[in-house]
Length: 112
Length: 208
Image (cartoon, rainbow over the protein chains, first blue to last red):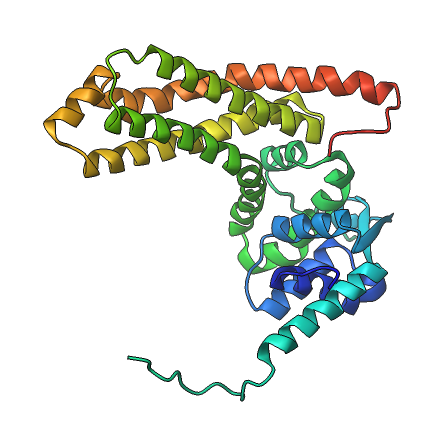
């Protein structure tokens, strides 16, 4: 197994996968907020993107800005092969943990 | 004739603070992301509350940069109080010197690291100051808890001889502020002095 990803890291990487060529900071933030159904600090997404990039799971490049962002450049992210492997491994790990459990869970048997 | 209204902008102090806390490579792109979100989503949804939202996002960065150092300061002080409570001595000078050195080192390291990261001396000092506030609050809370647990006459006498309860609850947290400014300035200047010539020489290794 190459890399074990946390749930938030998976949400960020999957946002990059979904957004393809439009995967820049704010778009990723909105996608993560939509999927997790809660407010997320922009800094938390930024810190995660930075960490994933340092681990070689993502790469980035600068693109042109727009008037609404005062012309400031956008940083676009691209999934790297190691990122793809890490996502697949994470999915496998979750599947392995849940294998054999009958869904949906209904009740917990008391041991006392 | 159509007149273009200027786009709303977040408070200038908050934008300046954000730029101080970001690493050079992210300054333009991340501040742009936040500005775009502020103008396109937060202003329409929250109106005047948008400025509070923006300040909250910036505070998140300051907290992230400072919390670990603040916890280290708080922990150092609480460990000292714990020793004074459980292992009282007649002469507290050695303990005071050790604690002072530890605190100065932590503030210096916080400033050194954050100036290295951002290339701003002001950021190093600011993070050291924020760490002082966090450490001071933790230290006051911690000493309150310790006194809540151990408040027999012998323990209170030991506290009194090591400086007193007022010192632990109020004086030291207040004293942390000037110490953080001085030690932080030293750490930040050291970082700037170290990295500026290396960058100028085109050294390949740079701080993270």
